[in-house]
Amino acid sequence: MSTSDGYAYFRRSSVSWIMVVMLSMGFYTWVVFWPDQVPYASLGPLGAISKHLVNEYYGVLYKGWWLAWVVHVFESLVALKLCSDKGINSPSTRLLWFIQTILFGFASLGLLLKYKPDGRSKRR
Image 1 (cartoon, rainbow, N blue to C red):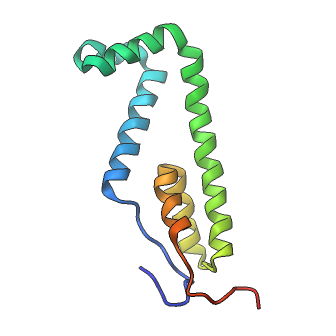
Image 2 (tube, one colour):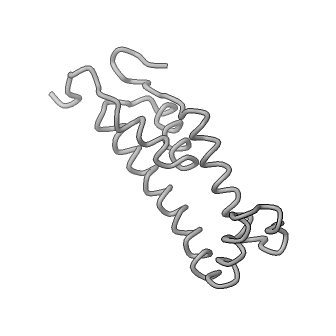
């Protein structure tokens, strides 16, 4: 959905990016918070690598999980700033960009970065 003035510009991330982010963050969450329930032997090389990381570097994995979410929150705040800079002023649209970016990170932020308003500056 896009209007000519950019007031309510929003684009959903592609399904492929949504799936990649959901599956990878879901697996990462599973490995960090429920490492005893992961069937490492059934996952082939991914299972072997995951088991090694859990056994040898669990603290790094745990901190990395939190860092990933901090980065997503930061990206969401950048998305709000970009909405302002690009003249996207609809509160519901800005909320959609914020939520989508907090969930899918750069897969969402990249769409907003590519958006070029129609040339009119919001500040005249």
